[in-house]
Length: 106
Image (cartoon, rainbow, N blue to C red):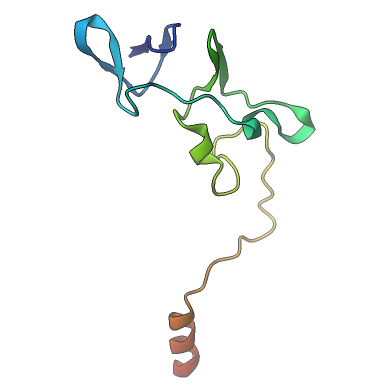
């Protein structure tokens, strides 16, 4: 559905049919949140390809709140950041489970 909240029509997954012929937003009634600095700074000083330039700022075409995507380290759909899969991700180990495994001998 086309979103008209951001002053320019754009295809959006979160757009809903609102009152009086205007579109609403199923994510947040105010619409999308502008991108954060991490979306612009990446490897080789390139910006993410999922950014769209609107009259009132720059927005992500994949997520309505890009800041929440960067809270755990990196955005899962970022096109401007290279992810190194050769190094394993450290798992958080529950201390209670660890002590039970050690007592069991496993």
